[in-house]
Image (cartoon, rainbow, N blue to C red; front, side, top):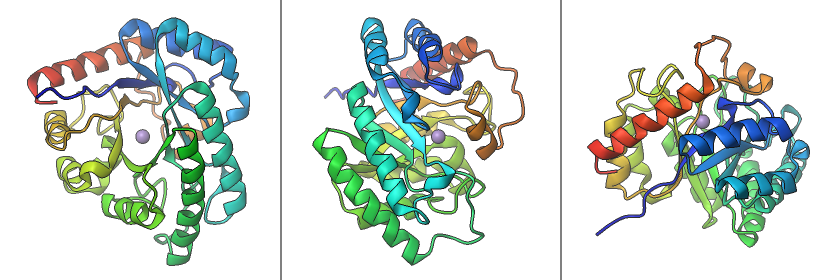
Length: 285
Ligand code: MN
């Protein structure tokens, strides 16, 4: 039996910190030329996105898109649930207008906001209530939501796969899945493959980044076992190469990405795709 192949995407922070007219062209053209199926467009500030311009651009290139975000500091969900909800509903509408099928990332909070403790029961209730309403709206416009598990230095809300599964259960909406990122899972879980097996059908989205966020395959993450685990759970969702070669300044700060890896965007994107293709050929994924 043949299985649908996962579409392979590139995060546009490889090429441009802003999805404006010029940044969109730079990122989308390169991604299409290199051979990616889609681009992941950041919706940190949905207001700067020219929806019509992007649709035409992606159509011309034959590229799909997914959208991702972390909430702004002033919309940290547990503290400002109404502000966060309005932001997320608008992001879902913009994503749907762009033709995206997924809105994913830190939908539950602001990256960099830390309380010194894990999320409280009260905070988790507030988060689940808001995300349930957002998921209901997203379902109407055929959008799936992803909750990204992110390491302890960037958020206190979702650090582990078990916490993510528990939040998904609390939200209890059919279009909410877990999003893992190999960089974060490598920090927080004993095994990335084990985390993938535990998630099974709840896994909806995968970010591929190496242990030091450098070129894919140059760090210590054993991607062959990651791909074998994805094959074992019959994962066919989007996989995305994420790197902050040219990221938004707020994201560089939140992720402590101030070290220059000396990566050339096009070289990084093409060598990463070659690494993925080689892994697909040598694993069952
Ligand atoms: Mn990520």
